[in-house]
Amino acid sequence: MTDLVWQIPGFGIAAVIVLVGVLLVWRLLREKKSGYPLQDERTRRINGKAATYALNIGLYFMVALMLFRFLSQELPGFPALDMDYALIASLLVLAILDLLFRWYFGRKADSQ
Image (cartoon, rainbow, N blue to C red; front, side):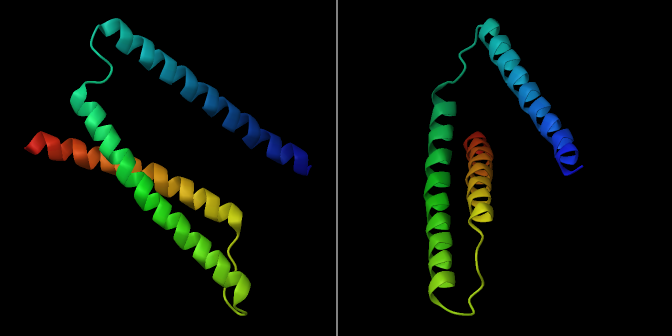
């Protein structure tokens, strides 16, 4: 019974991944047919700046997670950190920060 319960979300996740892949390929082909460049100088500058900021803050976040993990192993009574959740949290922080910085730098450049 347990295997059957987890097969349904597994198929759902696989369907979502395939759907997102098809949509990304369709969008890429549509943009190529439009004749406009996929990225101009402004977009590359914004994406590069956002990626740099997100990477730096994400690295500091990961160092803080490692320090927390070290303290949880060395000090008795310190709450333990599950590394699965730490990995998921660091990936989410990096992705969300990248999106936020792209949005922020895109709006900031438009206002100048």
